[in-house]
Length: 263
Image 1 (cartoon, one colour):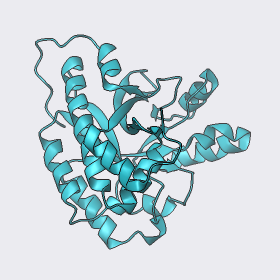
Image 2: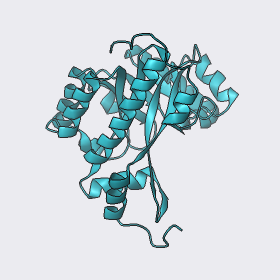
Image 3: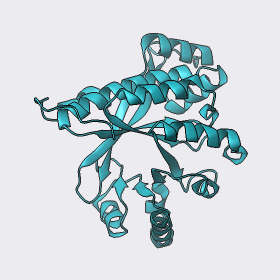
Image 4: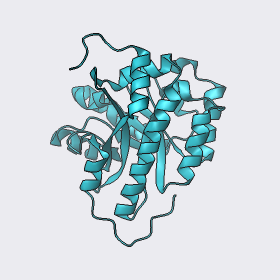
């Protein structure tokens, strides 16, 4: 039975690192073809004594205990293995996206350098999404150098949840983003939200960025996103987060084809 007392930061991080973190995968779908271009790897945690621990709590506990990089390295390794298996099954290189916290954007980060090296050995196109958490207002030269390290290593860069939380508009001009993910709120704000969405999509396309929208839950959402020319989408209508074995179960068996080269 889950414990009645909430677990401490050390219990959460130590327990999950020892027993192994879980990762769920949500498809990122091309809205023109309806075909997944890749999957977002989502942290999941469960402790036998306490039950499910929210991803936000895991991240905050790992940040406070200085263990965020080890936690995300474990998630990243699972995601790269799953992405490799999916690429083999499909005979094409797929995208795997990972969330990256603001606190991890350090040019001297051993985790980021490991990620670049690991990405070179896997037949996946890796994209890191900068989350809305952290002191985005303090963004400066150190964060720019960290992004340059990732970009030089062939890793795509994305802004997550534009339109939610702290303003990200200032980040749009700092580098070339592989994609920008729009918050689900745009699809839920009625006609005024759609006006904002239409102009935001036009701006991002003019900047040469692929646009992803979250929160596609109904056929109306899907039709709206297609009508506005949004490139990629996520949401339960297109597929919810599932474990790696369920992703692979929905794919054709591995054939004799050669694993596609990276990029």
